[in-house]
Length: 288
Image (cartoon, rainbow, N blue to C red):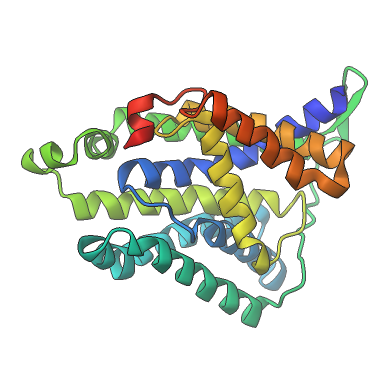
């Protein structure tokens, strides 16, 4: 049980990274971005491509991939979502699903459909024991980076002009617009930040487990489930939700591998029944 808890927490940090952007877009712009999982995979596969094709060191490859994913997300917002959202907000669901399909098919065309994993050679020691469980040093390092990036995002949303604009749009959009906040620019920046954190999640996860373009919907659903646990509109909720989901999914895969998705969804359905607003969400923000 100890090893399931530890390894689940290690993976949960990356699930939280992926969910941060999903939660941000849902809370600020008010859309369910079905292309989010495709952005996670784009960041992961681009990191692999830069590191293997061009021999780029991992850290620069990860940084460039995260920025590239952020730019792609911002372009999706400007060229597609912004126009459709003004005309018919519900159609954004269909639109983002179509965008995800296009990104997936292009990924299969250029990168292939096979699963890819990036092996990193580091000077770190192999690992250490936490109790009776061996913890790989690189896995632990990625977990620490996940926590640090969560702290960075929290500071960005609490201490910057962009963060104040985001909170204003999330709480009362019309009042924010009346106070001179440019909604279109704020939404584009929100999508950029969402894409950057999605790219980070993908670029980090591909060093731990294989990724392939066809896995996009899996990551979208996982990000949504993390928000269900943590609560809409809460970055702390997304972090805790990611850790809880990591433990839950790892335990289901470990103890009941043949029916792991069913077990995970069953527990989450019970969670929705007894705590629909999530651990850190509020009833009002959830309804909005």
